[in-house]
Image 1 (cartoon, protein in one colour):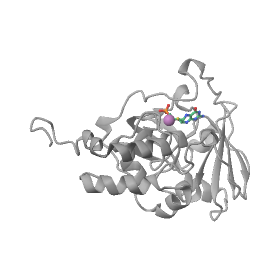
Image 2: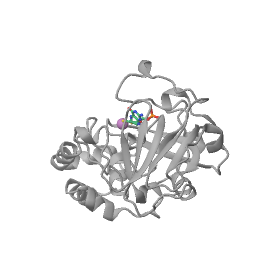
Image 3: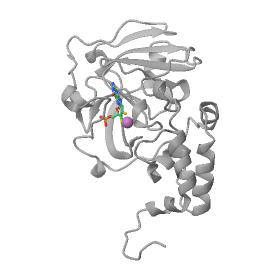
Image 4: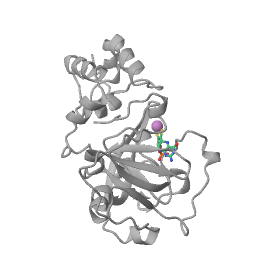
Length: 257
Ligand SMILES: Nc1nc2c(c(=O)[nH]1)N[C@H]1C(S)=C(S)[C@@H](COP(=O)(O)O)O[C@H]1N2
Ligand SMILES: [Mo]
């Protein structure tokens, strides 16, 4: 029962306690280090389960997930929730496979985005050329498998627009990214073409700062945090499964809705 004194901000997070065996099973399968939250469950299922029977159905669905099932469930037109600017966290919360002190800033003046694979025009791009393209802004929730999340305000070039501009094969299966810190990451083409997937250059109206991926990072609204590579140096369109840094350690490749 929800307390009368609790503001009505959605389902009581404790509702997951009614489903502990299945919650633990999902946590084991997805290798969640910080535990399953309602926000994560919502992102993984693409709907907001509120009642006991809905939560049970959502947990059952994701405990039988595999990449193929998830790719089939993905609706390219379904938009993730967006939030008001007043809820944006400034600065954002840092994460990487190492500490923030170890971040090696990228020099924007000499930086280039290299293109490879099934792309007609593979000329590299510099920061000015990317800044000159039409931009879009989204305010979305970032959810990390470690069990924390924040709302962030990102702007940049929609990845789908960019892929069309450079003549990418939009029927290819994957878009793979390499980064300055050697963090391999990849997404499916449907997610790449989703209107809320950005090659982001700005956060809360200012250039992204060094720890958060300057000069270019990916921001998807439909994938977990680890599928959002920072400090991108190259992008390849391919039909060969590219895997990724965390996927090689057993994390689910799709990891989104
Ligand atoms: N290049 C690179 N990108 C990365 C990572 C990383 O270690 N290296 N960590 C990922 C993880 S696990 C998360 S949760 C987000 C954190 O992004 P933030 O620091 O902007 O919140 O970046 C993702 N992208
Ligand atoms: Mo993460």
